[in-house]
Image (cartoon, rainbow, N blue to C red; front, side, top):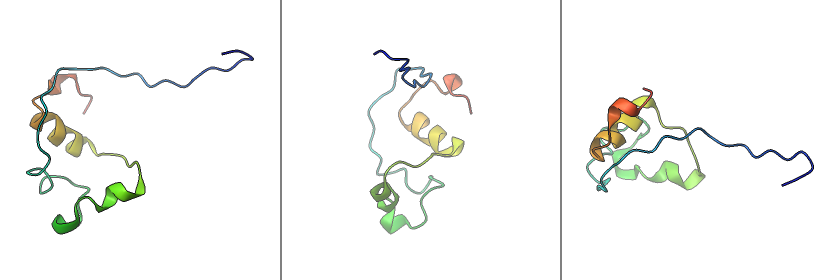
Length: 70
């Protein structure tokens, strides 16, 4: 890296979590408009999760939610 190039980095904090199935979660997500087509939004790339949805994922994965800035 030279010539003044400075890469962009996000400040990330990792915590322990457990792998879990997403199948029981679509009813709780705010971004889901149609339960039958809950994965449709993923076809268009990245999108921002609300604090609520991030909390749903964290709780399902048994992550330390105290570390989340919600």
